[in-house]
Length: 126
Image (tube, rainbow, N blue to C red; front, side, top):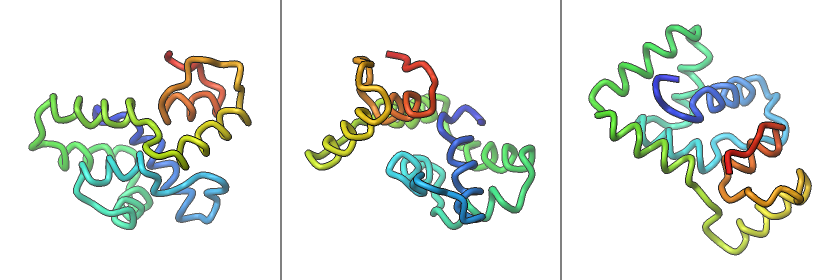
């Protein structure tokens, strides 16, 4: 969405958060916070934008928010998201637990995005 990875997923999670149907998903998770910081908004502001606009209006709003950024700024935030790894022993333990519960035979899972893809049945880019 508007050149930002993870944004459609974050929109879906915000809708689920508002509807109390988030289940085991986290919102805002650390990956969401990267985008929220980039857009200079907080989670509640994002929930409001997502739930008060249709998809086209939301895209226009995001594009307006990003209008002052250069393409390399978008690339940089996308890399932060795509390359994000666990950053502490406790998070690595949780990461490996989630990985084991999904499919520990996959040996190309290295980032949170890889783990999300694995959990949701998409091929892991590797």
